Length: 257
Image (tube, rainbow, N blue to C red; front, top):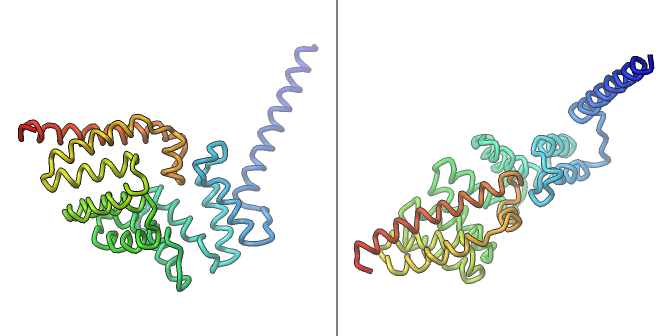
């Protein structure tokens, strides 16, 4: 009898737990979540959209709260910027581009990173000339950004503007001399320019730098990405550099260097 009563009690608790979970989900998804301002909803969205807080990272929740903020204040700065980043991460480039364009239309002086986000989206859409224009704007506004310099170099490589790509990477290396991303881009540009010996030295430096990249460093480099893929991202970086260095070393061997 004791076992039977205990089982019934546990069963009832399980049902209550399920019901509470369902209610919590419905409250989160459909309301009534009350915010005193659009800013409050926006900051709630940001709480779920940082790779530096992996325990809270959830782009579905972030998107939900950003949309709440947008509904409360359609002119709120940066909310379309964040929604564009989420759409980009989901691979919805057309929507991401539409959102970031609306963000740029909001005010006469949009923040530099909005140009960066649009350039990133355009680059993944294969619209390299347009992406290069936005990266040029961003790097002028943020000349010490390693990510801007690196991605600008990447786009210039796609456009076969190798000398400009090398210069873009060199500019970033002035501030970030040990960045494996910048070193890899620089080595690739030098290789394409036919400067094989320089490319070999820079490529090996990139390989050494990549071996020391920590998960925290990777997360700082990709703040909107899922923290769960940090280890995978580091391996992808290292594999990319290793492949590039192999190509360079083969060319160096053929040239007798």
